[in-house]
Image 1 (tube, rainbow, N blue to C red):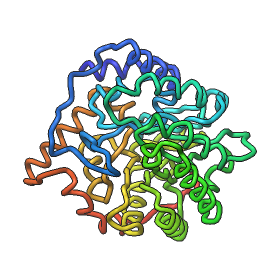
Image 2 (image 1 turned 45 degrees about the horizontal axis):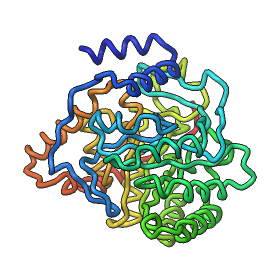
Image 3 (image 1 turned 30 degrees about the horizontal axis):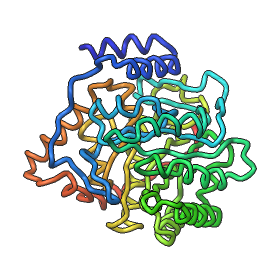
Image 4 (image 1 turned 180 degrees about the vertical axis):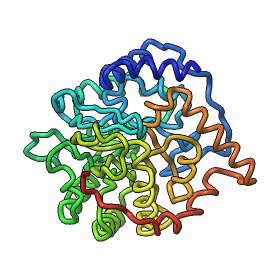
Length: 366
């Protein structure tokens, strides 16, 4: 009931103001939920890291690394902050976030609004000795003359401060950014980034995992090219996927015409089908984080069954409230007990072929 009342109050505000208010609540320590369950069967070891559970907070919520520890306290097994660009930038003009309440979805065209490397690195340095897995999602400035150079700078700046790094080349809100997923440009990007990590002076930092976050709006040949390049360059993992340009079967047509990336429940089927295809393409050993449309324990579990090692959410929290992580974890524990599974990892990939066979609809806007 408290969650429903809180959501109703926040939904009286415009989406960006509501987002800012939720950050303030976390910053001042408002008690938003009771403690989430802990269960050793939910732990996942991946890329040399020990995740207490497979549920993560996706990038986009805590863009400036202001509340990672408060988010961990909600029950998340890991948190990803950002996207963070070398220079501060305001992003696109407001309004730039739109709720599609009938669809439990959001369209955003924020455009990497953030305070830049300096401010975010200072906050992460201040929490360096605290426990918890905090990844940093790095991006490129909109007007950068060398976008790959921006990502190299992100590697150098945040490898000493992050548990893992995510290279975001799949946001639809920075013009031309998604073209970096094309094979030739991707090959150069990955070569330079892996070299930048290898050149770090501290051996520990040279082993910080690097994930590549890709779009859901890719063709089969494009997925094959990405799989070939991440395998060849020995990238540690993939995050599948970012927001979509698709507007298929939305009920809230008044908001559906807004430009930007769509997230939330309508993204689930497409992003999960892409995830399963990528699992088949890269094989069983590469780490994959599944994101897109996770809103309850059932959808989180389907991502894992489709081939994800870990899952993330963001829009689901907008509609599900701060008790959602705990509800998802309890649901996963119930599934483990019902199925007699020794660990959540034992369920990974049990429905990969089912999801890989699902059609991927056109991404043409409605």
